[in-house]
Image (tube, rainbow, N blue to C red; front, side, top):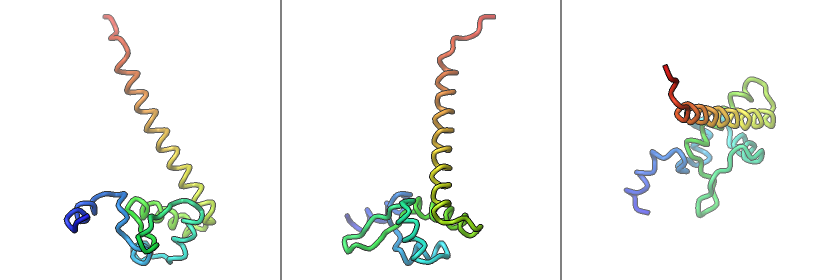
Length: 112
């Protein structure tokens, strides 16, 4: 991958552009917090060739939500479960909206 290819991927939400130190700094948290949510399997950072964790912007958004819940007093395991459930609810709502659009377009027009 050339430098130009790498720069183009920075707009990709799933591109693992951030080191653990930088991710922790951006979130205002510790590296231990990032390890903990990784151990809870909320996010799974990719690894560099040297074995260092790398985080994407999408993963940082999830980690920020976890930190918000933990800062409110929610235990980390519960915060991770809440985030998973929120994600499942969002996906179910998206699918429901798609089914409703499909059903509405399949209905025959009402005769006047």
